[in-house]
Length: 169
Figure 1: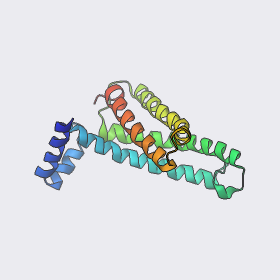
Figure 2: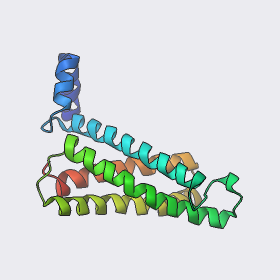
Figure 3: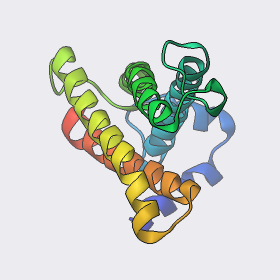
């Protein structure tokens, strides 16, 4: 593992920006570079999901912001609804960007590939919806720390599952 990271840093030191960008835009690249590309797609997906969640929570049918004037119980339920809708669009964005830029599609039929991709995403999403409050309750960690741990672990598990089981590589 450390040798792979060393190889990646050596590549970055030995090449100019043009060579690095060319390598970034190929699917057959170093695993660390592939993971960086995966992270860029993930940030895009997270941004889209967050914008949709906020828009729905502020102006949608199910208000979920503190300023909406609904009770905490209703607000919590609405936040789940809005997260599910936002997740749907974020998942589509992640699939399209990952299949076009990060991974090599073709291990499965396109529809089945999307289903597997979505199962991996949904599992991480469900665990995230359920585990955050428990981490805070059981270990007394901050909400931000719990969210960061969730994002890091979910990213790693999703990357490995997608690389090994969903896409060709």
